[in-house]
Amino acid sequence: MELRVRGERAVLGEEADPHQVALGADLADALHEWARVAAAVRRSNPDREAAAVVSQRGRQLAGRVAEVTGTPVYYVDPVTDAGSVIPPPEALVREPRPPEPTPWVTGLTVAAFVAVVVFVAMLALARTLAAETSGLLAFVAAVLVTAGLAPSLWLGRKLPILRWVVLGAAGGLAFSWIGVLAVVFG
Image (cartoon, rainbow, N blue to C red; front, side):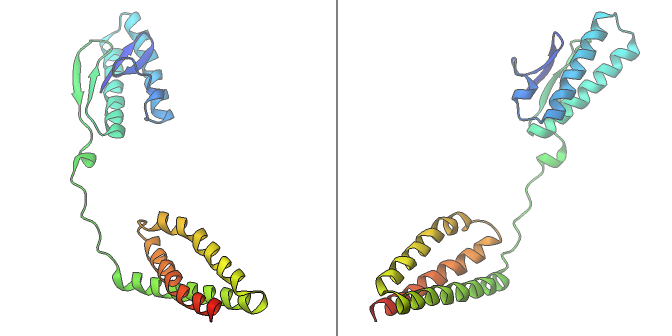
């Protein structure tokens, strides 16, 4: 990625506006403000101190762009037209940490508790509807509950903490169908 000043605008790459790149509004605004100052300094025969301040600010902003994007930024100094590569900070380049161990005991305890709750709730629903109305209505209600929970369970199956709740709810639903069928057809 390249950072330079064109006119009074900061551009990334060929002609990309910083607001069009996922940098955040604050960084994009800072880049445009720096570009306006750099253009004013360039027009007014800058002294060394002003040129050094603009160059230093440009390197700082290029470092922030490199941090946000995770890639090196080729920075073109607006006063001297000298180019340099600004690498991303070391924190983004280091190796990822190994995953934490899976909490099997705690997770399976939560899953067992949720399975019992779902199992009892499904059987209570089926038994109450079968006793008060008909077995067919109890069957339809069990199908609707299962079909309503299925998409949520599918989406939550890979979430680190909720996967245990999903496991328990899915197990409770599966085992409750034995009882639902016994209530409906028994």
